[in-house]
Length: 177
Image 1 (cartoon, rainbow, N blue to C red):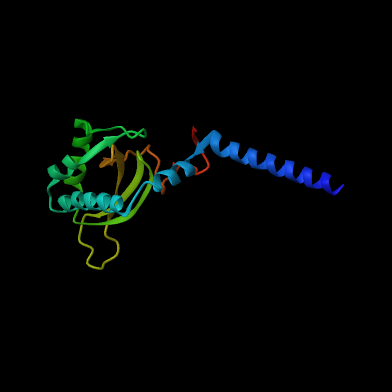
Image 2 (cartoon, rainbow, N blue to C red; image 1 turned 120 degrees about the horizontal axis):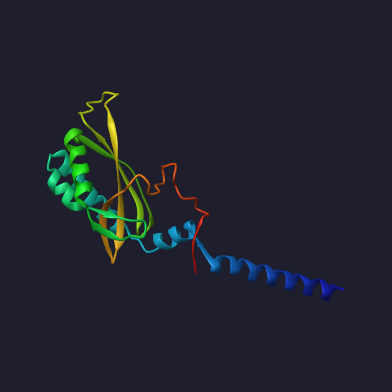
């Protein structure tokens, strides 16, 4: 009787282990992909992205919109990077001319996948001087890592972001292994 119980326990344990192994190898969740990407990053990646972002924001604060726009790219959710279209460039130029960046601060940043990340800035059109109520706008960028290089891409409103209503559910299946 004892041998039978031990055998059943061993078979049950082997079956449950094989089932849990199948689950993790059959598909990849967004959470899994984030963890895999995070394991490839170093402090140097963070420094590179934040330095590039600071250069763009400082350029905007200095009124050098042309330089800032030359540093920005467009990307899709697959991580394909391209120069800004004429329409995107014109739209951004109009925004920064109408609402100049007088002060800026990082709202947050988050690395998720090579082609989908968040770098969010809060920009102010007037000096804050410790006063409340100074109007602010957000600027959301999508740092994309492609072929070992980081590109600062403009994040379109329909692209998922961690702090947006369209954030991706971490348990969402995004592919197969």
